[in-house]
Length: 323
Image (tube, rainbow, N blue to C red; front, side, top):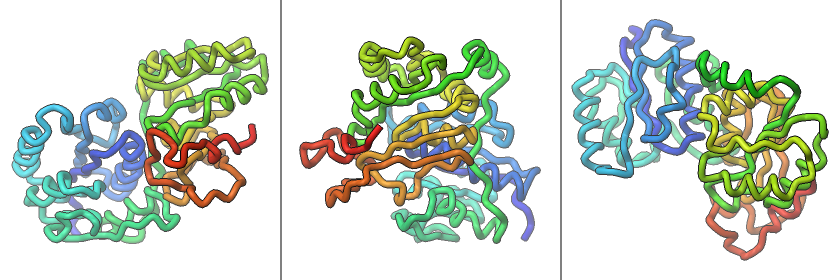
């Protein structure tokens, strides 16, 4: 097979999905070090890929404002770029339309995509215990054959590293206590209990987005630990990733910070509440541990992404996890 000259990778889903998709970038670079690779993500996730050494360009789809107008713009842009290969890691019609309209000689994606009949190669997708990076690798097998899969990776800049260096004069631990989905969050009182049991000579940093700051403030106010600082909303995604890399341990929910840890090979304890690691989105760091309830609950898991509130009206899947 003649090596491709240009490739587009499409992943317009959530933050964690984009982080895990960087495994494809690493794997492609290992096989085709001279290929030009672009990546398309939804607006808000592009900062993850700033300065990525294996990307020529990051394309951005504004899915909130003028969604379909911007979709048409991108479809025309992709078609005019004459990519040799378009890899669609998203399973829904909008991204499928971009790949199908691309006119690329190779269009790779999941069979579940409604537009997959227009792809040249398709791969199966199932939640059968296979990790997401393995599912994604299945999509690109026609390109890479049986080559090994690389781990996901992010690349904080020198400036990011400088910002974090000012915070890391001694041992510290990071906690990301929130999630977009309420049923994925370990309750605040559990985080307080955990923090109060951590070494009192070690700094504890609470991480998150700007909107997570009130929850972090409430947790800090309830803690007796003397060294708790709130960095939610203060650091960029790549700066948070860099901070997590040097931590004694990172404590997270089944959410995007877990994938930041994976991409930095940072030590991590991942707490699963309403979801389960068998969905295939678990931590990948060398030093990792999955923590979940020992109770057999017939309502768990209650969905792939979680819910705004417990459908059963209880939090037993989370409250029964012992600190």
